[in-house]
Each structure stands twice: as structure tokens, then as C-alpha cells.
Image 1: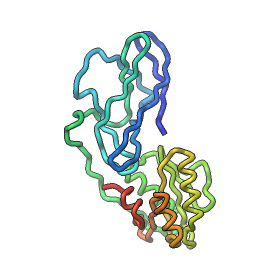
Image 2: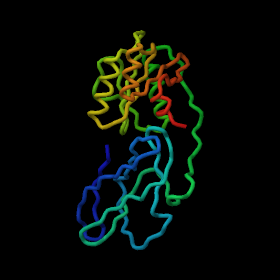
Image 3: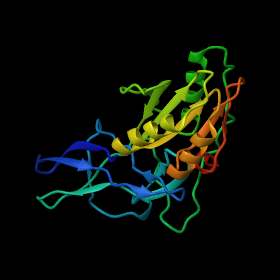
Image 4: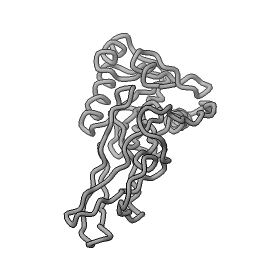
Amino acid sequence: MSESVPVRCPACRREHVYVAPSYPCACGAPVTPSLDGGTAPATVAHRAWDEEWVTVSCGSCGRLDQWPQPELGCACGAVLRVPVAGPRSGPGPGSEPVPEPRPPFRPVTIRTAQDAVSAAALYLRWLGHRDVRRAGRRPPSGVGLAARGLVAQVDPTVRPASPRDVECLWLTAMTEDATCAYFSLAGYTEEAHERADALGVPLFVLDLTGTPQPVNGPAGDWEGP
């Protein structure tokens, strides 16, 4: 879901509400720049090619790409450059991306149900979802996690996840206009696998070392480089 922030024009003091655009990542997920609502916008006085682009990380696969710097045209004629949180400016299209190497994932050993939830949350943060938190809506089973544009379900029980579990997660993601992922300690029934493949839901199994393992095609694609 696109982010919106209030923007005040420094030239005429008009108030605007700016909605960040979304762009399609190579993995198929929508990418939206994270806006810095606490910094005042700057008026664009002149154009410089290296200031026209920002580096944005895909929340699904972690890929870094160059996208246009968010801007807003005011009725007074001023063009405002909307501040972006985190990404660095970089070269425009046609140049090579400048990805930062991802450090090795450091799992936590799973001994309790809470360890399983922590392992999934750490994995999601490792993939680039920095704002992972407990979901406000509790799933029918297990524990729900959420981040910007993402909902996940962690099932730390000894019961393999069912097709209904997968469908409920998928419906929640559709309602919230988000991507989703399922993490299970005991795996999935054959019917759950089939349903997840049909809906495109990534399935991961948590081994006792705390490392999530992709167990279907969508999970392998969603995991990213």
C-alpha cells in the first residue's frame, strides 16, 4: 500500500498530501519509496541528473534499484522534492545498480514457540523488512507478523498447516493489499502445498536451528538473492 505524508510548500505555505508512487520490482512485487515526513521538502531550482534518482530496496526480495526522486507540483508553480528516508541518490536508468552485500543470516535456535516467532521475524528483517512487528489481527492459528506491505503467519505447533490456514493468510494479505508468507515448524499437508502453489503463497519450514527453508516455488522466488 502506498505511503502518504503531509507536505507544506515552502514558497506559498500551502498544505498538500503526497502519496508515494509504487514501481514494479523485477520480482513482481510493488516497490514504494519510504518517505521522510519529518523533513521539510526542498524547492527544485535547477535540475541535476544525479539528484533525480533514489535507491530503493524491494521489501520482498531485497533488490536495490534506481527509481525517480519523489516530487510534487504546487499550485503556486513551485516543484517540491519530497524527502525520502533511507535510500541514497544514484545514477539514472541504464547504470548498474549498487547493491550492498547482505550479511549472512544469523538464526536463533528454536526451543520454544516464541523462539519460532523470533526466528521468522529475524529472517524477515534480514530480507529487508525493518519494521516487523506483531500483527494487530490475530490469525486463526499461530502468530501473525506484519511489516509495511507484508503479512506473515508463524505456526509453532506440531500440527502441519492446513489448506484453510493458507487460505486465511492469503485472504488477509488481499484485504490489506500486501504480500504474504507462511512459516511452519511442523510443515504442511499435501493439500496445503497444492493450495499455496495455486494462490502463490510462499511456504517456509522452520528447522530447529532457526533457519527458514523455502519448500515451494513461490517461496524460492520470494526469498530473493
